View 1 (tube, chains in turn cyan, yellow):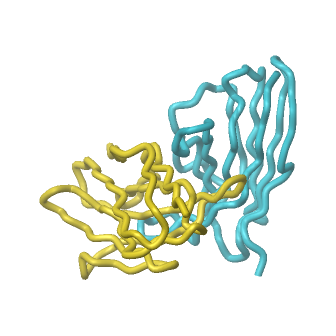
View 2: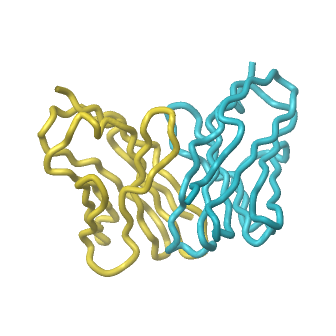
Length: 114
Length: 112
C-alpha cells in the first residue's frame, strides 16, 4: 500500500509569491494534518482536516490556508511568501481525529523562499 | 494545552553503547505519548507509542520507552546502538481530540 505522498518534493519561490503543496493520505485515512518544520526545530502544527472540514488550526497567519477534497487529499496554500516560510512542510494522515490514532507522515515538501 | 521538553539537543554515543533520550511533558489532561525518528531528508517515522496499560512500551529497531506519570516523563532507551540509529528523535504528546505537540528534537550521533 502507498504511504502518504506529497508533491512537489522540493521547490524554490521568491518573496511575495504563492505556493500550493499537495498531499494524498493513506487509503482509508480520513484525517490530514499539516506541519511546518523549520531547520533544526520540531514540527509545528498548522492545520487538521477531517471529513473535509477544518478541525484545528495552529498559530499561523491568515496567509496560510488549506482544504480537503472529497477523496481526502489535501492542499496547503501559502500566500505572500516570506523568507521565514522556508521550511519542510509535512503532511500526515490518520484514520480519524481521536488521540489514540498515530500520525503517518509523508516525506515532506521542502520550500525555499529567496 | 500541552508542551514537550527535550533537554538534550545533541547526544553523541559510541556504537554498541546504551543510550537514553529524555522527554518531559506538561499537560492538564490525560495524554498519549509518542516517539518519532527522522532520518536525513525524510519524514517522521513512528518508533513507539504509549496509549494506556503497561508503562514500558517497546517499539521498532530495539527501542523502548517508559511512561512515568509522577515525573511526567517518557524517556527513550536502547541498550546497544548502531551507526544506523544516527538520526533526529522527536517526542510528541497528544490530548484526546487534540493535536500533536512535538518537542524540539534530539540529534543522536552514533560514533564508530
